[in-house]
Length: 479
Image (cartoon, rainbow, N blue to C red; front, side, top):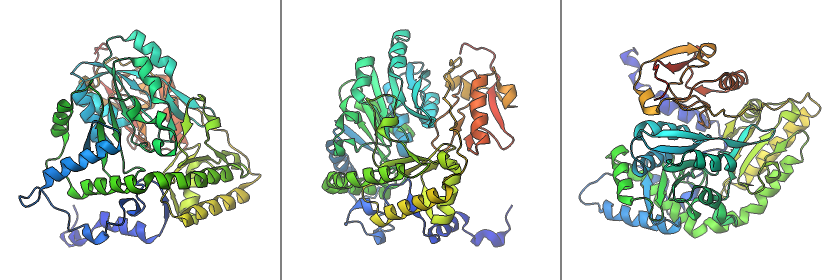
């Protein structure tokens, strides 16, 4: 226990200030870049003043309804809801409001870990669908459409599907392709990293074209404050009152008006300037990516790398492999941070990913290109490394995730886990996409993938510091 004299310390706040003092250039979430994407009406001095609550003199409920109505119109929805607990809140509300306990639901294997947690909350039984991978990158590019077709045939009682589009690296599939396969089943799309494909001439990749519900994590790229987003509804397959009720079940009764205000400001900013900003910066970011791709030993994820020619890569998301120069993604992250004062969004063994929103200052982009050029020159001729190829194995779900969540568990080593039932999601983080889901039987292939990530320096959630994972003590393997 800390001494009473230490109570004046502010370790978390102090760590934030320590980071700010370094003056690093950010290419990461959140995408607002210090509030640029909130428009000129925003003043930093307003922040503590608008930290209000549901007081009688404030017509907050009407204002919230009006703001959500404007958001629905802007994002092509019939109804939209503010989210102040991240895209996770929207996904959980969608799962609780669209399905009944025990329902069978198709789940794309590259869904975020929050979907796996939603399976427990809503008591749903998942059928995992395999995804395609980008050759030489080890990155998921989207649900395999042939596997989805087969799953629809094999599981005719499945009530709907939940999938991620675009992926964390910005790879998007035409959403009508999903609708053609699933028919009248409910389509829920985690579009946390999207929402802007309309503005550069790719509307067919936007969720509103075919989804019944879709979720925006607007803080990630579009520019609202961290922990904010939208849940959008369209059509008649889903009862909006059930979604409203589900949101009440899982939402704080004291939502932050600051967070909601940032959603309102950001929507207004995008409505006024968004399309022009995206159009103006499109050629700039494409030229930047092509310049990086021309550097010796550097690869940039582009449309030509994708297995399916029907997919496209978000131009404002830069994923680079430096294995040709002998550098892993983890090492590139470290060099950029320590030598160039640049902070990336995400790194794994094969690559690093950066976000380039259209309001990113031009000096930042010049700094990034200069750093890349110097790094490529200094590493030319070094021994190149082979990419770490891995897939997220799809195993049969033998016990319902909710049953697993409340059952007895025990910790075992990787080796002892083979053949056992996983008690919780095991996911490299970021991006938080589980390699093993609760209720799945753990295979040797899964363990080998986890070992490879661990050896490469990755962080794995669901594994403790001793390298142990939780398995279920349930013997009934039929759920």
